[in-house]
Length: 364
Length: 171
Image (cartoon, rainbow over all chains, first blue to last red):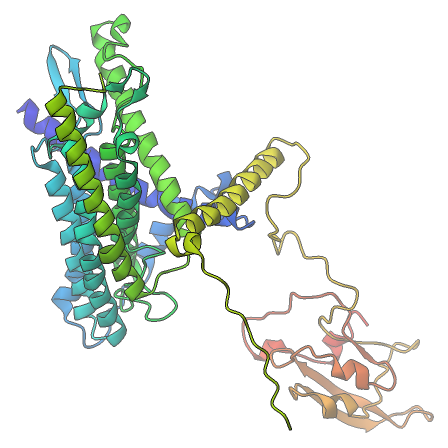
């Protein structure tokens, strides 16, 4: 019973993690782009004259989206039209439940894992969920009774073909090191140190894989420079026939997918919740009642900080690069990322094999 | 007539450009520099330290923009020393107006030296393109566009039409 409640609480917290990040990113997006373009950005929403650098836009945006008219155009397929935003948003949200937000802490005589869904194939779960999300995009395009929407949906499907294989291939090298598809295991592996000074994070051991993963991950989020299904300047995209919060859900999907990519990057390449040089029993001086919760807070804070860092970089890339043409994206995926990722994988496999056969272990 | 050809050399795309990663990093360098420099300036402004402004934004209604001395803004009709409008209803402004937003009806002027005066003088600011031709055309300097007033929008099109009385308010 306790285990069930704890799991439910963790899943709820994971969903809250994603939703709050998405709401916050809506503000970050406008503010960060404004600051780097010598502008001020959203700063008008106020409560009793209090503005707090525009943070109230986080509240103003959903209020606006929820109170707008939910217009359903004539000729749409109503069931699919209504279902598409939920499908699009739901699957990436579910993926968030598989990440280890922290390790295991001791509290009240038992150990508590901070990973909502402790699955031995957590990574496969995440990749499956983000791949399922594309159904919402295609469904929206199909149900909209609009050529622009249909084109956007088809582009979404072809974009998935461009990045999905590469995405898994870029992770292959890192997974070969960790020897497991379990995300908690991957983080546990990364807590070791190379020669006692450098943390054995994926980004240190797999820099090529990390960069390639970020590129493929940007394509996954359907955001600039790979915002082809949306294509604001030409076809508007798969959500052209949506309004109100249904449109807002599509917008949130992009941001939630960014969060998923950032979580994946943090988990597999930046050591997850690991804080270098912080021993596991760092807070044992606080006593048995406080040591566990304190450690849990530090782990979650560390993971969140790493996610925030990746999101910051993704956001900066989104506001720096012009968009790719469609054939350029397919070329990038199949002719550049995939061969590089496979070469990276082969090299890693060779290195791991040599290290094993010589009995060398450069870390620890 | 001979055809003149100007050869345009295409920019060299060397390996660093082709690879694109270097170019991406250069672009990110520019945007990161702008981001952190502006962030520092905003922080300095919040802390009360004097620094260059972090943004070029003009906060319009609270902080109106500084207009150039020759900026063409909302019209006004000037008055004579006795307070009557200077306009002699010659219709030159109405004739030259490319947007046809000026409508004048003339009537006899009671003064002996002046032949006509405007009975009504209306400018539809919703149509006006702010070209300033009316000001150039006016032979008696009766109309000017120097009020500095940009705040002319109204809730309906009829209210965008300004009559003589309104135009003479700051004459």
